[in-house]
Image (cartoon, rainbow, N blue to C red; front, side, top):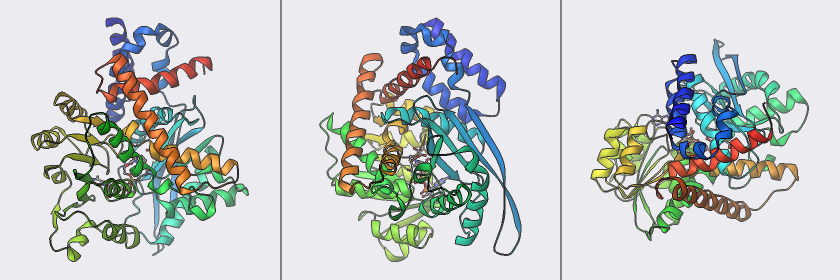
Length: 449
Ligand SMILES: NC(=O)C1=CN([C@@H]2O[C@H](COP(=O)(O)OP(=O)(O)OC[C@H]3O[C@@H](n4cnc5c(N)ncnc54)[C@H](O)[C@@H]3O)[C@@H](O)[C@H]2O)C=CC1
Ligand SMILES: O=C(O)CCC(=O)C(=O)O
């Protein structure tokens, strides 16, 4: 054991030495590696073949200039990236994020997580992540279009249906995917539909992709609760975020009989004791692209509070962080536990800081880690690529059933490996081990590449 713990430490030291400023990337890698030590013990070949050293180094990182003009004619220069982390399991796959915080550290941590998440789906997809520090908030449609066209004018060289197929993430939804696809098609002069997923349904998108991450999260949480004989019916749920993942997590939570009392955006959160009115949220966010504070104008029983972390002070049975990374710190975790939270399901990527995860697990809160619980989105993206290859479109029900089965398999495999190698309820370890073994074995089969 000591030997493999040292191997893990030596690997982390490589990151610290090479990229001392990439703290989020290092934290993410450290959490994954710490949980796979028992597997390394059983497979000395992974160490001999330097699998960890290879996994922490992206296969390729592209960084580029994105110049564009706003509606007043002023020129802006943003930075674009694509981190192609690992293609052992299949072509690179992962979202694009447009947000001012985007930098190499964040994209490397997201790409590293994506490799393992994609492996968990059982589908043939490697892992990548990309994006830009461009902020689409407050920009007109034509500004967003010009930005997307400029972004794709460089990105197109590095992607393709058999190479790398990006999709959306924070700040990149159906509108942006449309503009990106239009520009790719124009430059390549080829209708490579599977080069991007999350496309609108009338031009080769998949039914249920929009809903998939949020729905998948609820399917996973339901499986986890069912195992303990707990029903979702009438449970009070606190959700953060009001974007794609949050919206469809709320929708499925309602369909399964639970009550959602909060949602939020980067300014603050809404608490509605009567249950969040999802149609109102969709109108504010999807139609008007407004702020969540507007909700209380039409819902007098609801309260709006500035600041995001306050959402975790609302008592609940289940917490679903669906906004962004690092939104639950140790203090928030302590409040949730004090209020008797039964389960936490991560819809966002890495929303819980590492001390918060440890605290939940020590206090026997059922914990569904992001890479397993939010894998439904990328899974349906892979199904979109399958539909594009066969020039067919499956029904909503067909895709939804496949999504359910995939989430169920992810849960079962994570649970099985948690039982085999760690604490049976430790789905963090179970998910990491399941994914690591799949990726590492394929890397061995491909030789030293
Ligand atoms: N869209 C997808 O299919 C998938 C998304 N995810 C993850 O889910 C999370 C949310 O993504 P989407 O819903 O797609 O994005 P989105 O852009 O549709 O929504 C993001 C939401 O988070 C809020 N937000 C952003 N930054 C924030 C901050 N610093 N503090 C508080 N709130 C903040 C926004 O106001 C918005 O409500 C991200 O972590 C993303 O990586 C994970 C798997 C798939
Ligand atoms: O659908 C995809 O390809 C990517 C989804 C994504 O970015 C994620 O799972 O975090």
